[in-house]
Length: 92
Image 1 (tube, rainbow, N blue to C red):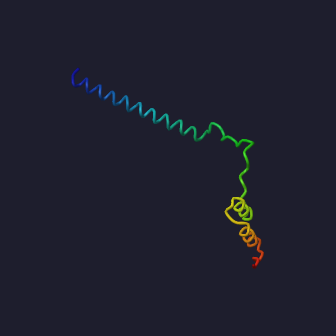
Image 2: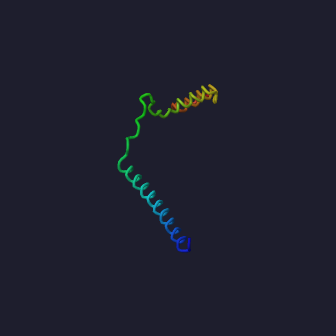
Image 3: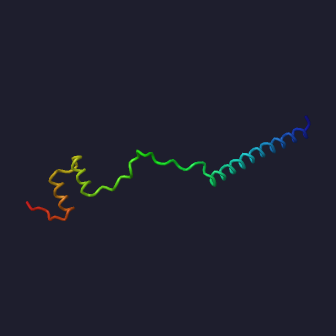
């Protein structure tokens, strides 16, 4: 094989791989563009057994949960509950 044959083979392989990469890029962009305009299926709905979002707990409920977990003593619970309800704190 002469110098011209080796050079022609190199150029043809570069062209082949360049066209192959170009084709893959065009195909991926086309498929991606088509899927954005025409979604295949709507998103799945939540199962019927799924619970609705939890409501925000009230301050009194949070205080009762802290008492149940043992984070505060019953006396402190009553004192804080009175403050939450607007009752004056008991003296003594």
